[in-house]
Length: 81
Image 1 (cartoon, one colour):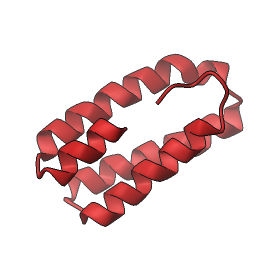
Image 2 (cartoon, rainbow, N blue to C red; image 1 turned 90 degrees about the vertical axis):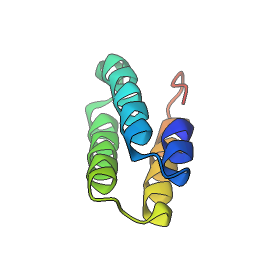
Image 3 (cartoon, rainbow, N blue to C red; image 1 turned 30 degrees about the vertical axis):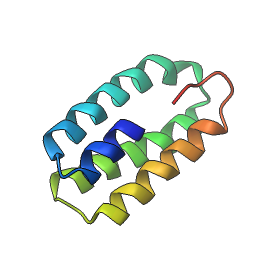
Image 4 (cartoon, rainbow, N blue to C red; image 1 turned 135 degrees about the vertical axis):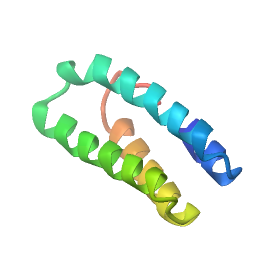
């Protein structure tokens, strides 16, 4: 997620999108092992972030969503960000 943030902050939306796809792929591998409710909340945040990247949202908005995702992940044992 920090890679998405860094790429977007550096005005590189294509790299930010690529980093998001990598993060989503990793998430998809671990999400089945996590409670459904927690997984759904994070999935919604990933969807929001993708929408923000596609519409070239302000950096502050993207950064806020990234850190919401990271906070959610920090609350889950065994999940690396």
